[in-house]
Image (cartoon, rainbow, N blue to C red; front, side, top):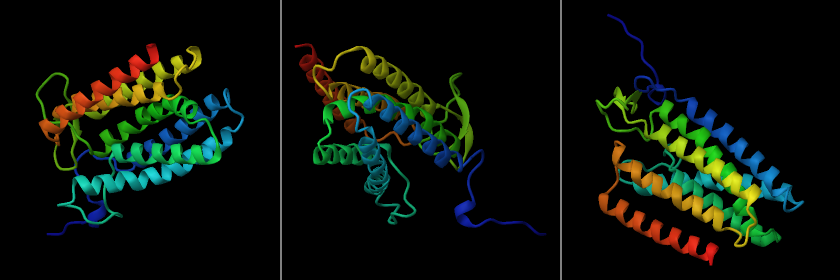
Amino acid sequence: MTTTTRLAPLAVGPGVRIAAWPILVGVGAIAALVAQALLFARVDSRWWAATLLSVLGCLVGVLGAKVWFLVLHRERHRSLRTAGACIQGFIVAAVGTVIVGALAVGLPVGELLDVTAPGLFLGLAIGRPGCFLSGCCAGRATSSRWGVWSSDRQLGVRRYPVQLIEAAGALMLAAISLVLVLTVPAHWPGSLFVANLIVYVLLRQLLFPLRSDPHTARGRTWTTLAGLALLTVDLVAVTA
């Protein structure tokens, strides 16, 4: 009896399309950069400087995403090269880099962050389905009518499509933030970005119980309470 084998890095579970993740994430990053450049050009002619900072931010963000993943999964992964990536780490590292860079070259930080919001969430909306197709961040198995056949790289069954729900939420945030950027004067520059980011964090907390890796209930509770408090402060500051 004979059989064929594959190298371990290429051996994936049922229904997994590994190439979908880098392709969609790459397309999402490009869309985010283009949207940011077009919107920032409306308030500052140095859109090219903002774009260069954002490209650097993306590169640092990839490193941050891997480090965040290693911290969360330190008992199972020890190599930065083979580690997965967490979107939280990407956002923290990328946004931090953009803020520091903008301060260094004299770009208006608040305005830059606000016009970054539509592109950032558009990029997330494009890239998150890549997680669905590649089997990462998978939802729990379910017999619900809302379940969609997908894989967690080990087993293909009907699951809650948490990645697609998150993508839809990100797309809504992108649309709302775009309308606000184009129509509402920024009395408190940066507040729009902060509000959208908090809402996105809250959406993730709602979806975590539906994931196969739900995280801790205490962590979700504290994150939700902190997010609601910060969102309240942000809204009060804007409307005051």
